[in-house]
Length: 381
Image (cartoon, rainbow, N blue to C red; front, side, top):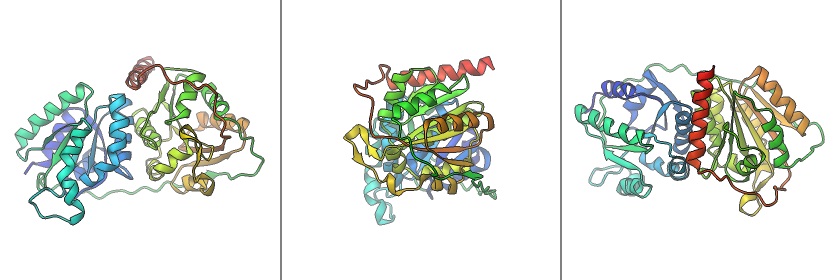
């Protein structure tokens, strides 16, 4: 068995700073170490963990994800359509529940047979983690070399690999909503392009704008392609978690997360995670057109959801219903002065910009440009 504390210190020596994941009994001792000694973000699901770690990495923190292999399926979307096209390298640990020949619960039987094959299909480099500490350290160095080449690397962890690490008493903080508004006036229902124009006009040298997948990112690109921007592709529903990771890594920046109703509905558990970790430098803007517009305009169920109340109940400090573009501008301007984790909800019409193009830069080029901006901005401070 590996001495968990010595292995964890080796990861820290290699520069790994932020850990995010979902518990597994095989990984509990490594997770306990991360909670006890490192910065650990408990995700609502494994895909969110990948997105949180990805945002933190782009923000400048080498990151680790931890998950049970049953949850590896929850991470398939961000591992294939976020970390792969953006070339975001993460260090991953996935347990091997259901290993052939070893008795386990029936729900792990199939996943135990296909875990490594699934990693191969996703073109994720991996190794079985040795239970010898010195060999495991050598494996870590090899994994770090892959990460230095922008390649994600996973360790597959068998039962009994890590020695006991007792979880220290956790301090559970509670963050409550301080201010909430509901609809109380007529709605302007602007286009998304008009709303994005207002948002973009208020950015400055401290701002980072993260646009969700689909037409949101494409319209923001047409309004102004800036070093401050990241246009999400794929990994639908992950922009809020990506923003959390970025906000935690870049506490001196203003992280503006621009979301859509279909996207947020896909991973609503991220609201609870965001509310708990409550980065004061993050504002989460939901532009709701009640449609999956980029795939044909099919209706979402957003009309049946009170997002303002949901965000407030999850611990967003402010959760505001925005009626028109003037209110949007005013709310953003106030947030830039007062900060605090804030959620803005705005209904928009279903009309998209005609003949809408796509970014001419590849996703990893957008990521690298943003990283350069963040480094230059840090130097200039």
